[in-house]
Length: 559
Image 1 (cartoon, one colour):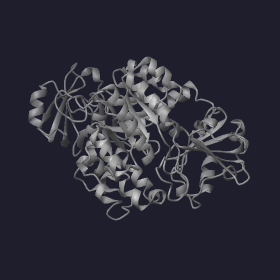
Image 2 (tube, rainbow, N blue to C red):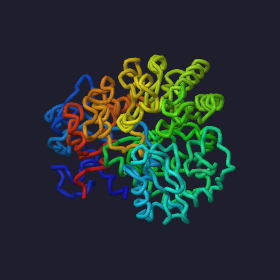
Image 3 (spheres, helix red, strand yellow):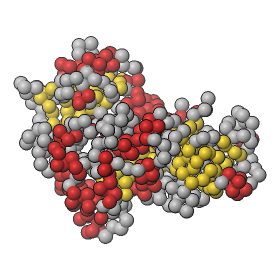
C-alpha cells in the first residue's frame, strides 16, 4: 500500500534515533543530515558535497560533513548512506500514471517475440486485468515478433473468443481487438474510418482487429471504466512504482479529469507521495472543465499545462510526415487534430494561462506545432510561455533551429531512440533519420532538454533512461559506439535533463532541480554515480532512497 512507503525523513535509519523508534521521538522540526560518498548538487557554486541537511521540506545546508553538522546543530538526526551517490530529485518529464497503473494491473505483453507467446500470456491473465468482463492488456509490438506484421482477429486464438479482449500497442497509438470486442463496439465492414484514425481491414473489407489513433475511440467508448476501487488501486501502484525507481516527480502528459480529482483529494490529505506536474487532457471532452477551472496549484500537485496530440506514432506509421513513409509509399501518417482545431485549442488554453505541451513525432506535425504556437504567442504577446514539444522525434534541420531559437522546450525520451533504432530508418530513410532523435542538435540550437520515458510505453526506470542518453545503445551494448553517437549526451547532460531540465520545463527551476540551501529537499540516493561511472553500471544500479520535500517515500531497506 502507498502509506507503507510514505515515511518521515530519517525514521528507522538514523544513527541518533534508536532502530524502529517512531518519528515522534525525534525532536520536532529538527534537521536531518544525510551523509554520502558523493552528493552531486548541480549547483555551479558547489557542484559536489558529502552531506546535506534538511529541515521542514527544504535544503538547509550542503557541504562537508563537518560544515553541515555544524549548520544543523546538536539536535540533528544523521542518516549514513555509505557509498551512495546522491543526486537532485529525478523527474520523468513525460509519463502517463493512469496508463502505468493499467499496465501494472493488466496483461503485460512487453518483450513478447511471437503471437504464440501473446496467446500464452492472455490465457494466464490475472483477475486484475479485467474491466467489467473485458480483458485488458498492453505492450505488444509487432516489430519484435518472428512474424513482424500487424496482428488480426484470428491471431488472438480460440480460448478467449467469447471474452472481449482489447490490447494496447506499446506506443499507445493502436489497439488490437478480438471478434467479441469488435462486436461489442459495433465495428463492422461498414464502419467508416474516423478523421485522424484508421481501421485496418482484411482483404475482403472486414475489420482486421487493429485500430490506429482516433479509430481507437470506437472501441474505448464500449470498454467499461475501471471501478472506483480499481482506479484507486492502480494509481497507488503506479505512484509506488515511480518512487521505487527513484522518481521524485512526474510530468503527467495528458491527465484525465477523474485521475486529477483523485490526486487533488490525495494532495489535500497529504498522501500524494510524489510531485505531479499534471498536463490537462486537451484531447477529450475533459478539456471543457479544465478550461472552466483554470490552472491549479496544490502542495505537491500542479496543473498549469495542457497536453494536445497532433499525430500518431512512428511504429504504427501514424506519425505525420511531410513526405511519404520510406517503407509504405503514398502514406504520410495521420494528423489527429486538424490545423484549424489545433489552433483553436491552443488559443483557448493560452488565453486561460496554460502552458501548451504538444505531442509531435513526425516532421509535418512538428512544423505545424511550431507555426501555430509561434503565431499564437506573437499575437497575444505572451512572455515566457515555454511551450513544450513532446517527443520532437523526426524534424527538419530548419525546425530544430526554430525550436531552440524561439524558447520551446524539447521534451524527449532517451529510451525511445534505443527502442526504435532497429527499424526507425526503415520508416523514414537515411536522409530524414539524420535529424531524428537529435538531442545534441536540439541543445546546440538553444533548446532546454527535459528528459522522460513516456511510461508505460517505456519502463519508468530512470537509470535505464540515463544509460540510453549516454550510450544510444541497447542493454547488450549494441550497436558498437552507439546509434548516431554524435547525438549522445554526457553523464552530466543526461542528469541535468532529468533534474534541472525537467524543473525548467515546469517553471520550477527556482525551487527544484539542484541541491542548494532554500530549495526543495527532493533527492535520490543511488548505488552508482550516474555521471562518472561506466554507463553499463547504470543497468545494474539500484535506488536506495527517494526523498520528496524532506520525506522518505522509498527506502530500499524498508521492511
